[in-house]
Length: 634
Ligand code: PLP
Picture 1 (cartoon, rainbow, N blue to C red):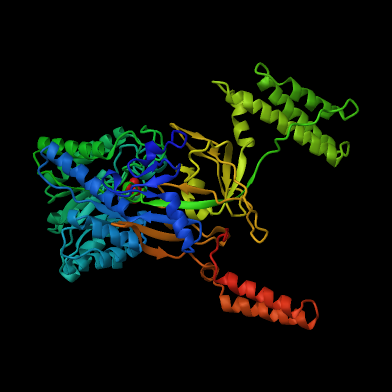
Picture 2: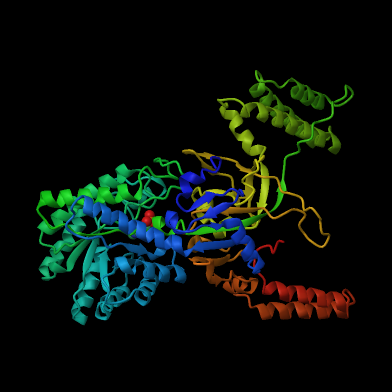
């Protein structure tokens, strides 16, 4: 358990059972649990291929409930004289079943939506129930059409609030409002000077991409006052970046924003909402620290600080306390999704003990052998450097024609043997010298996995984000291998070689050796039992930002909902077929097939192929077009 830190990042949804399988408790500590390995086996029996994204709808419901409960508790604790009205930022995961479920689960809390673009606004308008109290916060860059649609939606009963991010948007909003005779509810997005932190820290600060400076905000107030519309300005919004690891950054931001809120009210704006944006972090490594993959606070601390700071500032400033709005995406959507994928093959560095080198063999081989024999606890760092030097020498000698292919192979084998022996010693030491840190990585086994990092975990590739990854079974057995993961793409960046560790990153993941099949079947491509890994907490941002590198498409997705009988498959969203991904790059399956048909006819004419072979080729081609883009596996 400790190895993968599941208790830290998994609670209360993921744990390990007596059978050594990961279990999922989608309703947290209040409901039943599912054996994830058995669930995957049952889904495989339904012919649902890997990689497979499993979304647990009850986790989504639980996240919304927890967030609202945290604010309700904070409001009660601090006698806050107003309410909380959260919104879900659609950008975090726009998939229809998710947004629809969110709206359904959020209904008791008047939970609304945030749109960051015109397409997202269109989703929100069609999904959110009009005439409810739920807010529809309109962020992002806006053209005339965006603003006009948002204003007209008020006629349907939607609580649209147009947040001014650029001064230009204000002028357009006022013009449209006059033309339509519809009063807008406006907000301003402030550029706080509070410094953000972590990967998304540049979302705030004086030169941030988004929002208005204090003097621009004053211009908005002046313009609205001049047109008799200052009462329309009702909301202050800020967003200091996603995954804020340190509570002190949140405290600073809320302190600054509360003061701006008070001042805007004093200037005569009809302020009634304070929207604190996103940023509520997820504890990916389970360390509960301010490390970038973690956070040093919980949801309750977050709600408490917001409620307490805003109350104090409003009391001191003698203004009414606002309705509190937050736009948490990551903290709501991450936990629900688990990506399951299988290991196709492994590749280990040679580990057979080397044969002694004879006196008659080449000097460089004798040097390597001597180095190997002499390695001990006192000289392992020095001998590591010797081994590297002799290996490089062997390569140069080979390049100049002084070493045969066999001798070069022998040199490599001796080098790996040295590294293996040195690593064994280094692992037993408390302190490992810097130049040996890479050794673990160099000696790691490569586990080839059936997924595309670019499609399923783009943040792992693009910004080195850490996600918890672990086997979902065999957890009663010791994982004796140390591995990195290599994906299906023909891209050397398509790998995962950074894994969670306590407040740190480790370069290898402890995994089990593949188990050979008891009865190897000559028809089958695979010679080992299935070995399933799970990548957890991937429900936010990854799906939509994933790309089609090497034309690996969307994975299969199932939505699992708990039921009195265990669980039911609420939705199955089939992953892309090859025909579908080809159509994204303007190829038509029937044209391609016709091309191949013509080519086989030509080859038949020239006696280069038999009729049987040509039919086999055409059948394979046609069948592949309707297939999943990933390896079909067992
Ligand atoms: N609100 C705005 C304006 C954002 O840009 C974002 C994303 O960065 C969010 C909310 C969601 O943030 P998070 O996923 O950290 O909750």
